Length: 217
Image (cartoon, rainbow, N blue to C red; front, side, top):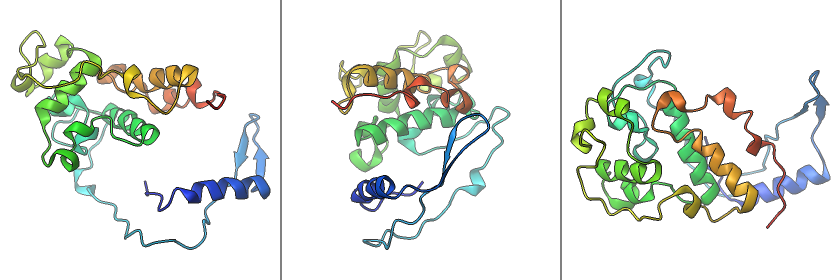
């Protein structure tokens, strides 16, 4: 993933596509296949060198794994609790990141090290608990670190200052109506306590929100 150096590039690209569409073809299944637009002109400013990192942290997601992975605010709760993780941990991260892209701010910004100088793991789990409710008993039972943050009945061990309004419905500002409702349903398939209940990437590609047409508000 590469940061767009200037948002105006996207608007200019859309205008270019409207005036001079790139080649298209219709596949055997009736879908339209578009040629990717790769040339956005000379860079407007220096964006730095892109580096792919963390190859040494690669694991096989076909089997359960333990250990610390992922950037803090995109970290799945099973990683925090050391309740083992698989590919579904990446689905959690995707859901949180899509929220950030839509709203232009991080869902868990209040525990972001860039915002609060230091990552606050108990507060992060407190925000997740406010959003989703207490963790299921089976998640707590298999979490080797769960006792650091929760009692046996799923009660938080710390008193975190999480707003009572920290709910999906109250946090979205940029879309409304059916668009908002369907987006919440979409990300709710990814942001779940139980990893096995999260949708797979293939299932998410079939979600109605990705194909719906909405009127501009």
